[in-house]
Length: 417
Ligand code: ATP
Ligand code: MG
Image 1 (cartoon, rainbow, N blue to C red):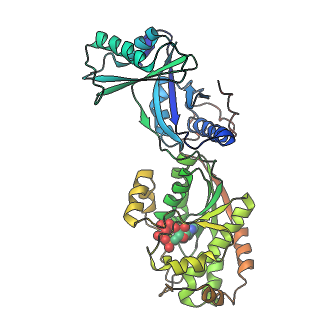
Image 2: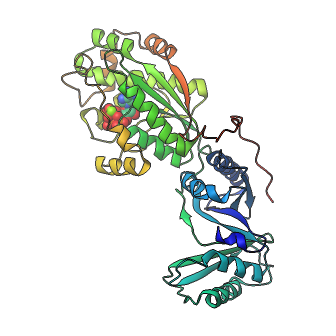
Image 3: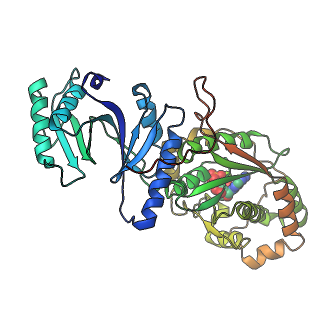
């Protein structure tokens, strides 16, 4: 980094988050969880420490060579509004000006603006004064003109707690709330397009998730299970290591095929999935079940059918995509990075398992009658007993260049400065 030539500079990341609506205990919980998630995202990138400082986080200790990778990972940490790699300098006008010049020197600079902020009102200079002095130094060193409205480069200068930070790039974070601040949910996780997006939506609102995938082996191939694992790894980049529960549904499906009217099959499979997911939720003390249903998308997703399916559980069932168009879900899946895996082929159109006709206007009474010949609770227990529990980390989790693995538990947060 060019700035290494300057006096007393250390590479640093300044992370901003929105504090709107955060008060008292909630705020401390939000910040603590965010720090944990930031540390988790930086795993393996050097001896980084993250500290809270007046409404922002400071990450120190990431080597300059790992900064681009750090930024990329932090752009998947929910709760972050912006990520600014830069340098820390002593909080004098001279040091700030020198660092700003060092950061822009040697690069083409058609125009620039200085954006100064100070978190302390007792700092002897106002933001305007800081901006003026730093701007004048940059003009003198480079000859570049100031353009406050549409600059090619913005130079951010911040003063907080007798420290100063200077950076020339600011990346957008994903927004939302830190994963872990919004309870725990169990996602019915097919390997299709919708349920990974549903999981991501809940994660963005701070929910930690457990993913449950049902398969029909050996009547369907292993592709859906492998896809579920790959999709879980992609979501883990946003979530941190995630629990994936793989459940063979075939015994329950065969009982349903044998004892229930054909056109209710799909609905009864779904009810069985909810019952098993509820058992997963009870085991882990989760608060809600989540599905990727979108109203009217396919025959089984009418409002009547959703009512008839939901009745199988007393737990809260959240459907974050209920009002989305398929094209909107696809666009979001592409942004998240799950789409390409979701569309990989999988043999789940087994003619034995899928009914020729699907009931579109089921009632609770009708699905109960259709289930009357089955001991659904015993089937759900037996299916749950076959669950296979895995923990899926993000793809980079074990990338430590020859260094011993860190303990799985995160170190406690350092105290705020
Ligand atoms: P997706 O793209 O998520 O597969 P879909 O449009 O194919 O959804 P359906 O197959 O009708 O819709 O499934 C609706 C929802 O039921 C899914 O979003 C998911 O939450 C749940 N679900 C369906 N199949 C499975 C499965 N094999 N394992 C876990 N959950 C499932
Ligand atoms: Mg599906």
